Length: 149
Image (tube, rainbow, N blue to C red; front, side, top):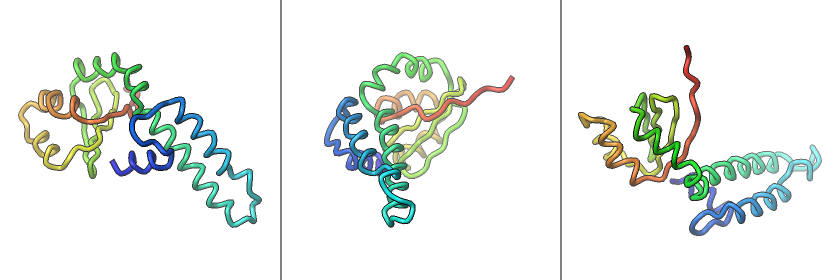
């Protein structure tokens, strides 16, 4: 949640993410902080390198959790959570990462330690996740693991 709030603040997103507005803000921030604007000996050069990387990461992150992106990918997401069991999971802070048997990995935000403990102590992990995690937490697809033959 901290990362979401940090990126929303950077891009001046107050409520729901609008991809069109986000893209315009992204372009303006990149123009302002592009390292090529500064000479190698300029003290702002290193800061610009760091800022530009933060801007790029923030943009891709916010696009991945935008309502338009989630709506466009809802069919694949529903297929995964409905038909593919949980292969692996990890929890750090308020972030729960679940890797499914089809190789897809999703991150779920705002999952407390209490909910995580209830999940791992559940005798039906997938059933608990379908009832408690999937419908109640913001998520994003984080990576795709290639299955070996």
